[in-house]
Image (cartoon, rainbow, N blue to C red; front, side):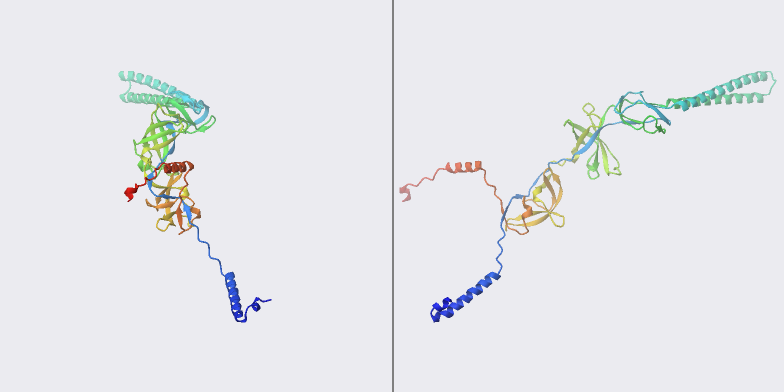
Length: 398
């Protein structure tokens, strides 16, 4: 049953037109998309860029060594039959450290000794012959030329004796060189040969750290070595005992290591307070100290990684309260903060946290931390303690 027949005839067209309009409106409402919800205004923590002092200092790992280390080896070649020196052993001057097989050198010395005996015998015969010819010359039985010939033979025999003596001394030294003797007092820090090994003359066998002054040895990269000068102060921290020593730069390498491209630096320290050889220490050169240098630092939570691989931060525009991305260059780390080399100026406002939920041009508000219950109670008490205003007298009001 249609409700239009219940209406008067003059109102029925108006009813049909209303129904059509409602139908069209319903169709349009069903086809149109709903308007997107407005983007929420996010509350962000903001910090103002300002220079602050650098706290980190440059530290280098070092090692305590003797100022003088002697690498000892045999002066002759041979086979090692015994090694008395052990790693870490203390040795004295004249102490035997190792020994070679001396048989060949003893035989050579015996041969030189035999040659000396033969040369001595020839000299004695030549001397007796010269004396006999001299007596004959005095009696004019021989000519002077014959006497000079015997004199020459005697001098030649004497020279052969001297040569044999020198050869015997040399061979005796060779035999003595089969014993490796320490010429310094110190500690054995390295052993490079074992018994049974055949070594050449001069090959390293034992290294001895001489007693006396101590050095701290560390390396510095190429971009820092220019600041390290001879005599500059250095702070040395012993890693195990946490004690601190003072030292001075004694030596800086003239050329870089071909493999690591670093320069070796030696620092002299007091012998009385020096730790043991090989102790690990941390070296803090005063010339390379950056503590207190004004730099711009940000927390790591303020940094974000862009799609192109660069680092950026969100800057807040106080006029429009919107954010925009600002590329920055990171220099280094200082504790839990990051040192910014370029991209920011003092006074800029940077979003300190939540950078991953923001978009370029998004509106934000400054986050205000809620007061703690103690702060709220103090504020309420201060409000109650304020005296109410005194009402003015009626006469004065009139």
